[in-house]
Image (cartoon, rainbow, N blue to C red; front, side, top):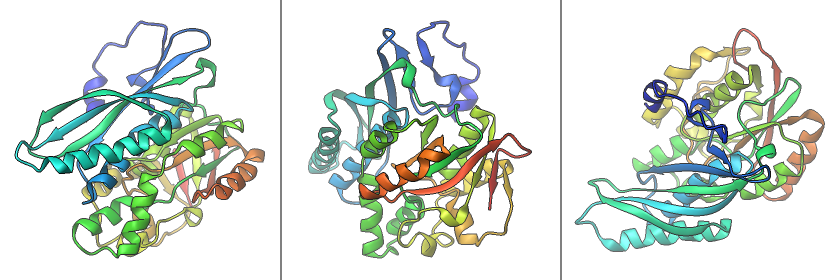
Amino acid sequence: MLDAVLGKLARSPDPNLLVGFDQADDAGVYRLSDELALVQTVDFFSPIVDDPRSFGRIAAANSLSDIYAMGGRPLTALSIVGFPEKENWDLLEGILAGGQEKLLEAGCTLAGGHSVRDDEIKFGYAITGLIHPGRILPNSAARPGDALLLTKPLGTGVISTALKRGACRESHAEAAVESMSRLNRRACELMLECHPHSATDITGFGLVGHAREMALASKVTLRLEAGKLPLLPGALDYALRFQPQGLKNNRAFAECAVAYDTQLAPELLALLYDPQTSGGLLIALPAEEADPLLANLLAAGLDAARIGAVEPSGPAPLRIF
C-alpha cells in the first residue's frame, strides 16, 4: 500500500541518509559519524494468538528483527498501542509485559510510547539501533556464487489461521509461538562472525516476496531448493485448508517473478508465499562460509537450513526447484 504513495515523494537530499524508504529495505540507516549510524524501523499488528503475553513477545521479536536483518544492535524502543476503551486493561498489561520480556532479552531499552483508542487491539514498536556505516547488510548486495541460508522455519501464517479457526493441534501452535517469539539476535551474531553480503528477514511478504526484493535490488537471480526449506510442524497439514488472505495476495503479486524448474506439491508451493510473523533471516554469504555458519546456527538450537544459491541475473528473479 505504501509503495504506491512513497514512490511519489521526493527523495531526501541528505547524504547521511544511507538507506531510505526508496530502497525497499528492512530499516532506515542514518549516518552520525564515520564510525556510527542509527538504524531505525517500526512495526505493529493485531493479535495472532490469544494469550496476551505471547502476543507481546511475538510483536517485540518481530519489531526487533529488522534491526538484526541489517546487522545492527537494538538500542531503544517506543511502544505503539491501539486498544479498545472498554476492553479489560489486564490484557494490555499482559501484552506490554510480554513485549518487555523480549526487549530486556535483546538489551533494548523501552523509552516510552504512544497509545490511541481503537476498536481492534494493535501493538508493536518503533526500534532504534546502532550500526557501523561500513557494515550495513542491505538486501541489495547479494553476489553470484553466494549461498543462501534461512534461519527459521516457514508456516506461521497458515498455522495462525488454523489456530484462529480452532483447528490447530496444540503442539503445532506451541511450536509456531516459540518460533515467532524467538529473537533473531543469535542468528545475527553468528552471521556477523562470517562475511555476509546481504540479508533480509522473512515477514509479511513471505519467502518468495522477500527473496524477490533481494534479487531485484541485487540484480541477480536467487535459486531456491524447495525440498530444503525448513517447515514448522503441521505447516504442510494446514497449507491448503487454512490459507490467510495475505498468502493469496503474495502469490498474486509475486508469482510472476518465479520460474519453476520442477512441479511442486501444492502444499509446499503455498508455503513459499505464506506471510510470516517474526520469521527468520535470509542470508547471502560466500559459499565456503555457508556450511560452517549453518553448523553454528544448528548448534545454537536454531532451525536453520541452506536453501539455495545466488546466480547471475537471468530471465526470472527467482528459480525454484
